[in-house]
Length: 485
Ligand SMILES: Cc1cc2nc3c(=O)[nH]c(=O)nc-3n(C[C@H](O)[C@H](O)[C@H](O)COP(=O)(O)OP(=O)(O)OC[C@H]3O[C@@H](n4cnc5c(N)ncnc54)[C@H](O)[C@@H]3O)c2cc1C
Ligand code: SF4
Image (tube, rainbow, N blue to C red; front, side):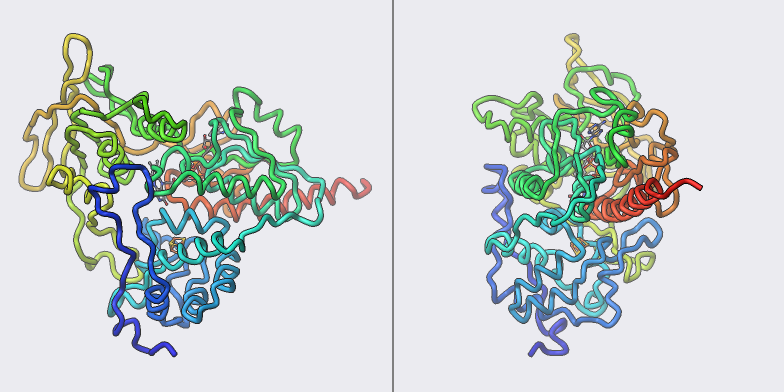
């Protein structure tokens, strides 16, 4: 029996990670396996709260609290504690199409809202989720689920990121015929060409796409909607179209010297690195490489951190990351009370690696880049910055750099893909809770609709949009069969 105070008596424990010096030698995931008995202990820390805040999935202010997929966390924690792994997997599947992605890269807002965190430390929810889905694949429980009946209705999904894949999965299971159009050569959106391999190994993304294909979804790569096929043609051919095209337009810096060689948007760099890795070109350098270079990453967010970790693996000479804001607090502050998922200072994987390799945290705070510097060949050689904080302003500094990566966020959808579709501030506008655009049979979900966000929110939107599309196409089909008055 688990004790009623296990969440206090037993300490929170996560799997060990490979030593940073070792793990930067390759692109593999770096979490070590966690013994079964330890998982059992961690699962026993869940109190099965009557009102589980961990699964509420909502925004409080701009902060996510609880799981946006409404995962039935206390239920699968209990099943894991009882050793009923298959049942835990079945319970997880009720709400989460792809736990292998969320359990690897989700920032786990569920844990910030866990009640155990009020008096002790939160349950290691994300890690238990990972153990369930990894076991399910190992044991062969994850099998293609081929729909028994087809409705004869067709849906086109544009974009194969987490939003597009989730919607496709649900629509296919409802019996509709789904075709996914992707402009890249591989499927997965930012799961494939964005989030680096050490956070989500690409073989897991491909494994899921293969499974969805076996279940009947048609995947078409290297097809750019708006260029190779028009949106109007899709509207004609399909009963509904869902745009899950992400928020790909990156914010840039309109300052002196931006034209210099050696300055790249972060996504161009990360994509080139993953393509090089996946195409097995280890005897060559990627088209953009940090090898032997002094790297500066502009932008203090997660994309910037992924650039730092990638540059370290490529063998950079040094790496620095600029943030416009100050260091985050180390503990929950009064303005981030429970059950808000707090924004706290953490030694993310990239920073831990930088510490080990270069002896310091690469993050520099309150820094604004004012100018890029170059040589007479038009190569970047450094940049000038100003320092902004409460005590000082405009303290200028020069930094040496021969590779600069801009990771200052995303402006939204590429306008050329949304001709005729209403957008506002880079987001596709939809009817409240309907996911329907100004064109009746065109829907939108994920980053394209809500702005750059998280995998788990993209998946939630994919699920909800699928439900709305199902309603819409079934209603239309019934209407078309009724005799006109
Ligand atoms: C570097 C980086 C790291 C991140 N790390 C994390 C993380 O650790 N955890 C987390 O939760 N979130 C993370 N995110 C955010 C997360 O990846 C996104 O919120 C999520 O992928 C959005 O899903 P989506 O399906 O809406 O769009 P996307 O994943 O962006 O997919 C959109 C897809 O549409 C395709 N497409 C676009 N236009 C067309 C067209 N005209 N025709 C055909 N195809 C088209 C694109 O090629 C792309 O494949 C990260 C983001 C970045 C940039
Ligand atoms: S998907 Fe994210 S928020 Fe939901 S249970 Fe898993 S780790 Fe927590």
